[in-house]
Image (cartoon, rainbow, N blue to C red; front, side, top):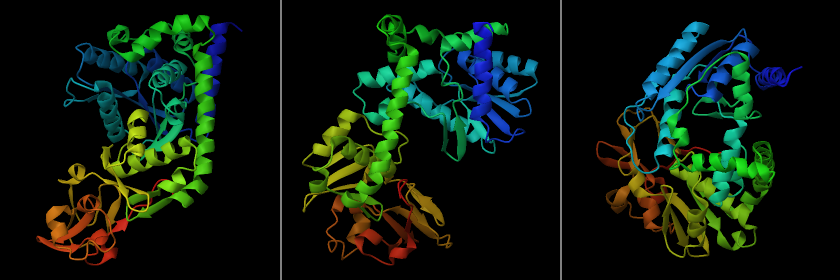
Length: 406
């Protein structure tokens, strides 16, 4: 069998295995930008899952003049294949700092809304993306989480997601397309050296000469994923000894933390910050290390880390992040608190300085003022009904959503 035909057979076999738990007639969402990786994914899914209903979406970030033309190109491709296609425009993305991260978040938001009800939504990341991401994060000094391989299947935002092509390089996928005489769109930003990813891509030939090829880098990322799973397994027991969950705040025993390897400490603090701060991604490693070692109150990731007597470290929500967040009951507030009361006149909001002034016993549990001001409270027609952490009213008016690791 010719090498290109071997690639085609391997891609088809991999996709069949990846989706063996998905009904053969499922509706599958496919994110296609027009680039070679996502176009190859679309054709491969059509070949491997002939009974599935494919729905395609192209996200137009509105950042490049060519983007609209590329989206229409994908639409024409889908029309020829008899596949329904939607263009998802993003109109509120502004140029500025951290643009790629903001664009990624906006892209996931758009795809999440579009894909509700589908069995799975597929993204066209390849082995090349795994290797480039590994190099970028290695250069940043990332820990285990940052260096771990992208997940092939996961659940987030109420959806099942998949990256079915992580075992194939961009070279493999372009060979697959050439077999079928299928073209793709070239994104000019792929040659823009102002992007770190492009810089990593352009040094890959030199790395290949040293034996650090895409496949080997991806294999190392996969090994880091195994380490990540081992750490997660160990942490199930360790958390019980060093963490106390105090009505949505997380309190660490610093004396116990000092006895642990730093990787455990960083993992636990990072996941706590992400949960309390409502962030999909963990904080950068350098900022995390500064926060852990800080002797005074430190703000990070929408949270405050507060040293307390008894060598404790409390992580609470940062008040400015929730000062304007208000929800009418029944509601989920700030992603961590639920008020089941069906009295529509009840409102959940941060307690704030004024609310705290209405709580005469707030000093009783010795919780820092800065933590109490950002804590949840229930109000009715301007009257404080409950502030559980400040010792005011009935505590069971509010329920704490379990942490991801409970």
